[in-house]
Amino acid sequence: MKCVLALDQGTTSSRSILFDHEGKIRAISQREFKQHYPQPGWVEHDPLEIWKTQEATAHEAMHQAGIHCEDVEAIGIANQRETTIVWNRKTGEPIHNAIVWQDRRTADTCARLKADGLEALFHEKTGLLLDPYFSGTKIQWLLDHIGGARAQAERGELAFGTIDSWLLWNLTRGKEHATDVSNASRTLLFNIHTLDWDDELLELLDIPRSMLPEVRPSSEVYGETNPYLCMPNCIVSGMAGDQQAALFGQACFEAGAAKNTYGTGCFLLMNTGDQPVASENKLLTTVAWKRGDEIRYALEGSVFVGGAVVQWLRDELGIINSAAEIEALAAQVADTGGVCFVPAFSGLGAPHWDPQARGTITGLTRGSNKAHLARAALEAMCFQSMEVLRAMEKDCGTPMDALRVDGGACANNLLMQIQSDLLQIPIKRPRQIEMTAFGAAALAGLAVGFWKDLGEIAAHQKIERIFEPQISADEAEARYACWMDAVERSKG
Image (cartoon, rainbow, N blue to C red; front, side, top):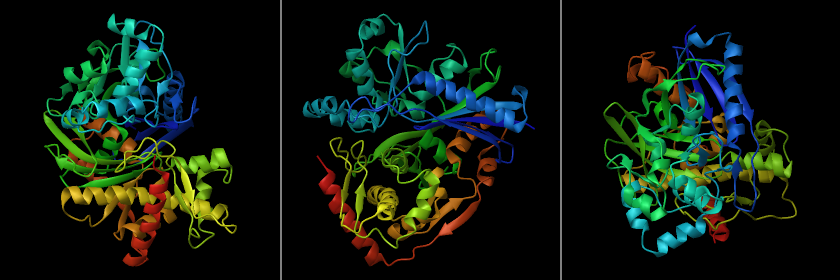
């Protein structure tokens, strides 16, 4: 049995999934890793733990499927984006924990750049906004705050990478220091028009170009894995940021096709074709993928805290023992009883971009209970996605008639029904919801001929269930108005 191995490195866990030629999952392994919160608003990961959990899950998945490395035709990588690692080129040791995309420590730096009138320049070149979400100011922080780091960087001794680059470096034992265009486009350093690192932006953030990985297409042979790994001499041939990988996995190959992924955050992306579309409603313009000479762009709305709110209810409040329990708990009540939950733990993303916003719960009464809070948490994911979808409709000038969904949280039937109710459009859930991993596998498999063309990828996509609205448009709007009131209270 020949397979493609997808390394799906997410914000809270590392997973490895094996796909056969029919696009079916043959094995899956997952390991969570520790989240570090050194200060309020700061979020870090241990890069070595990320690598160890990713390698371990690859070994476990292959063992489950009963296959050997010679049966793995290719490896594809999908990764949490923007999360920033700087390491020593000679030793391979990180100089500090990874600074996670959710981290807010560079909010003041972004504010200063805005005050200097530079946001238009960054936006025009990168399609992004000046927000601590992105990698550029995180790199600058590491160089300025880790002893000796800047001098080392200027001597060419340090390497920067997002998680894809870090995994590729370790898979090849330092032979390959590269990233793909989709991940590069999330750094604040990459010009999405020239498709290269931008020297003017590097100078503004005082980052040596020598630190940066080579930028390559999303689907091509990057190199072979090191012989001493559990998966020796396998070809790594696909890389993409997790949300772009999901867009590809959903077969959103044509302009106008869109999907929403419900993971740690929620991310709504729309393919805009071979030209970048500038948003007038505070969405992001990003590179979707590149295959050969073919480039595709996307509009994106980023919700920082989606499924992570369920993890918070489990780990910090202890009102559920597992994420799967939230659906039954939330279903115990018909509505939230007036409770609104704005999970702005890491500020607010699109379309607000307020790094100073904080988590807020409104509408509590003596009768409010954990079921109301659980249902409000599910509604929070849906309301945030609703805000993004409305901004996207304004940018595109046309309403969306249906929404494709994926990600682990979309298995929650109540969540999907609430989303359909609020958006007042059908929600289409595929039979295979692991679209991030499948997208990475597809990019890798296409590069080595495991799948011959995009038609084969699209043929694997089957709709499992369609959720239709069950409340009136007036009721949806009334709920939305209450949500927007709570959002305003959370700002600043």
